Length: 209
Image (cartoon, rainbow, N blue to C red; front, side, top):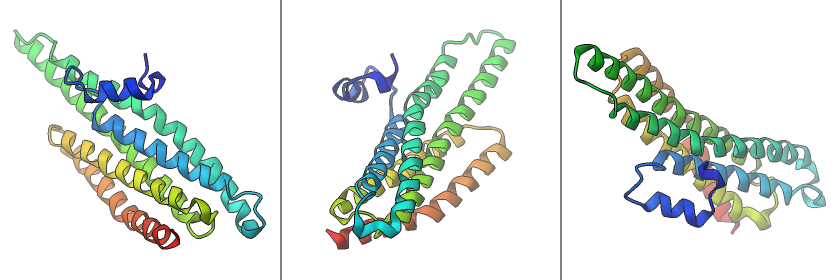
């Protein structure tokens, strides 16, 4: 059964269980991102049709639709991150008695670690896009839902940074230096670009509450 098909109670029970190494921080980060994108979409929905915000209706409608799409993409990553991690644990069951087996095992581990890097990086990209969308409507959306937009930014910020930690920890085990350098540089660029947006959304919504 997929994680997204579990009840919240069962998901959290699995998350805190020492019997399961996954879901872990990567899946939790994707979930936070999905919550943030969902909240952004909700805030825009509460704005559309209000005369006070008529000049921003097209903007909010666009952000609402894009945030809902991001929510769906991040939901998929909840399971994909756990599947990527499981590919790493599967390597440990591979035989390592001969040199050929050891070589195949090493190749499989490197492929699995790359998958465990690419997947949370996707979470980073979607979380970053979610923060851009939330930033686009701060001060231009229904102020009675300002706290919800602030929580959206906090969730998306946590998703971004949580996924970044998962990228970083896997980069340390990858032998392909060009691959590692590429994802480190791309991750650092995203962090530098969107963290200030997250902080500004929170600051502005705090002023409105």
